[in-house]
Length: 323
Image (cartoon, rainbow, N blue to C red; front, side, top):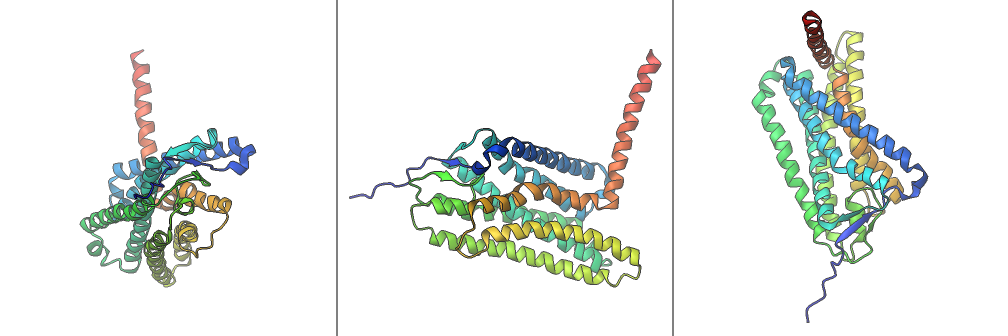
């Protein structure tokens, strides 16, 4: 006799921030504002880097791809979060949930690889300036960027495939604001031990290795900075690297606390707060910190603004002259 099919769940209900019902309007406003600023800021970075030839270097190529990634990364999570705040307990189909899970892991892993490559790029530029043009040539940079994206694409398949093979026979309420790995495994009515171990190993391989490589790069960078004879030069470089490392630490720290930890789980509400940092906050902070702390980029922005003002002024004079 054939065993009955227990995968009866065809959709999930995202509970979101159900314990904060009286704060729904405020949360919606805050998340919408952050989302709009994230989209605008990252699109400005992409446009400025594309238009200014002085920024056509490996560092800004990585930054441009990071900004492009952040647009899609945050768009995978935040629109559904906003919809859930407007209509509490919004349902999402099983296939849409698996698709969101895949793209979340794909973009998240790609960001880890890009951040590691950006730290490596800064290490070469500061610690080996004479060899930098050879070691980080435009072709090498393009190959590294392509490797980050391709590895990210492959990384997303394993968790989403293994989660989709689990049995879900009810309840179907996900106590989160998106289809994340831990709450989905908790809902499964079949054994998720192998899946949990595989995802743990994958998380260690991606998060911890990338964070370690980034940290080692910054250790060498700091040691080189300490050898700068100028006090003002050391202070300026420390300030920039400190900002970069702070944002990277927030991103990796929150991700590691979610996916690389013992089987004992934190409370769902704490999980949501931690998730907000790496899904909503860092997509805004990361490219902004990397760009606004850079003199060349700020000068490129001023140049673009002056160009736009000049075009506007010419248009006005032309209309006045015709009259």
